[in-house]
Each structure stands twice: as C-alpha cells, then as structure tokens.
Image (cartoon, rainbow, N blue to C red; front, side):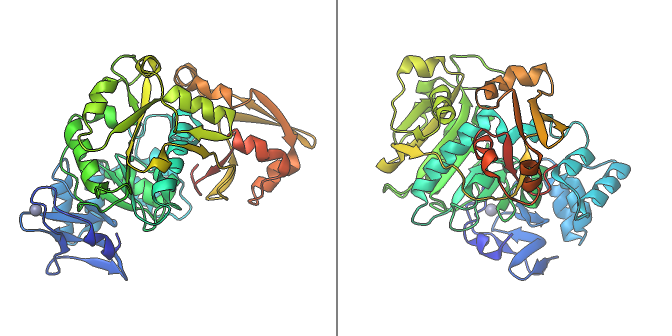
Length: 415
Ligand SMILES: [Zn+2]
C-alpha cells in the first residue's frame, strides 16, 4: 500500500487513525509499505503483501502474529488459508514466477477457490451492464477529481473499469485477501487493496471518496442498513458531488440463481435516508447496451418492470448529470491485451479463421445465455486480423467484433 493511503484509513472499531508501528517489523520500498503493523488506540492490524488487513476474522490474527515475528511468507500463507505444506509450496512457486497467469494462481489455490466462470467474466451480461453503469456514473462524478472505492469488489474485474477515472488509485475493499491479491497482481494493477468486513463499519474516513459502489454482492450482505449508511458516509458531502451505485442486486419479488437475501425495491429504497435513490431494472439497461449508442440513466422504469426484473441497479446521487443518457464508448484505448473471447472455438482454414460460440456447459448457458444477444454464433475473419491482435493492433474488420465482445481487452497474463 502507498503510505499516503494512511490518510483515509480509520479503525473500524474505535474510528481512530491508523499509523505504522515503527517499533515492530516493517518492510518498505520507497512510499510502498509491503509488510508491517498498523496501530490505533484500540487494536493492531497487519499489512501483508501491501494489503492492510483491517478486521479480526478468520486467519487475520494468525497472519498478524507472523508479521510481528518477521515472517511475511507465513502471513501470506495464513491469509490464503494454505494449511497444507505441499499446496503452500506449490502456491509460493507459482506466485513468485513472473510468467504466472491469473489462471495459474487460481489453479494453484485448488478447485474450491474461485468456482467457475472467471475466464468468461469480461463478456458475461452482468458484467457488461455493470461496466457501462460504472463508466457512466463514475465518469460523471469523478470528472473534476475525487477517488473511487469498489466495495466487496472481489478480484477487481470492475475496479479495473475505475482505473482511469479515479484521480488517485481506486480502492478495492473485500473480505477475501486472496481476491484482492489477485486484483493487485493481475486484474487491476495499481489499485489499492483493503481487506475488511462489509458487515461492519468501513475502515475509512468520512468523505474519503466521491464514488462508492458495490456490484453483484449486496444481496449477500446481512447488515444492509449499516452498509448503505457507511457508503453514504464515505461519499456524501451534502452537496451534489458524489454518487453511490449498487449494481446487480437481486430482487425479493423475482427469483434468480444465487438468490442471496435480497430486499424488495421499496426495501432497498428505504435504506437510503439522506439521498433519494433511483432504481433501474437491469433488463432495460441491458437492452440499451445491446442496441449501442447510449445508456439512458434518465429513464424512469415503471414499478411493474422493476418488480419483475430479477436484478436491479440502484444509483443515489444529487448530481443531475448522472441521470441522463450516457454515450457508450467504442473504445477507451487498449488497457491490457487483445484476446479472442475464450467462449469461441477457433478453426483455421487457409487465410480465414472460423470462430464458433461454445458454452462451457449447460449451466453457463442457463445463467448467462443472454450473451447470445451480442455474441454471434459463428463468424469468419482473416487470419491476418487475428495475428495482428497478438501485436496489440485491432484491425478494422474486428472493430465491430470488439464492440460485441468477441474480441476482448483482457488484463495482461489473465489466462
Ligand atoms: Zn481502534
């Protein structure tokens, strides 16, 4: 973590400032703190691999003891829950290799770790809606500066969407250390990670951010009222600068897979005590994106449409520019590297290449089948255009396929 991030960190229990305990073990590299101990008036917390662990759940106190003893290697093993020595050794080997990919690390963590579909995350329908909403809302409220936070952001797939919008490095907060670690290494390099508990007070100063979001996770939060109160505390200055986004939360009125503990639309609305939120059905936003052109956040979905939609997006802001149509960007420039969408099989025939859409299994087709609205079943392109992707060039004949997510701009060394 960067030493300047200490300015916005607060103890979740006493609310006090956190500082490096210089009498205990610490490893720094310029402004970056790799390992060390943070202290307030009530508690001490570890920094492991540049990630402050500001809670007392799980193995965090074991990791903290390892840092105090000057053993960051063991602290990291504890935070990754690597109790088996052979598996831990294998993980250490993969993690220390510069050539390792996100997929290699996930594989080294074992089959129970990331369950399934991370490989396809950047083209799934939930992601493309959330990405467009994030780019539109954060792009509006962060235009004149300010910082963003991605709460329960997992391994940083959407934190990546904030990298060029937040004036200081965006913060990725999550309970799972391993996911934050993957985000900082692969998905959103340069973000600041904070390991903390979303069911407790957030370990940040009031108004430390101008944009706060939580996507695809809010229905699993038990303390929803506290969570929204905390999001508001982080961004709201009483003026019209900030915005809160709760993306892809499930709807108590309409069943969906991985339902969680969702609320009704009125229930969600009632969580916001100081800023009037606007609730959108995800189907309407998705249709905008498939059509291309603009994402219309000026719409007011009728309550029947909201009630019937399995997934909702909630936006709270006093900034009127948020609730307008936002042009969908064709391309924000290459951020990682061009890759063919792994949902496609590739068949080479002379100087032509046939790409065919193949779902990994029926469950994927059931849950994410809506992607057929933008992913074509089959397409033929030139081998030269495919070869150019490897050199970081997007040939004109692939521009529309990039818009349709057949060609993806993936993080480097993703798989
Ligand atoms: Zn404290």
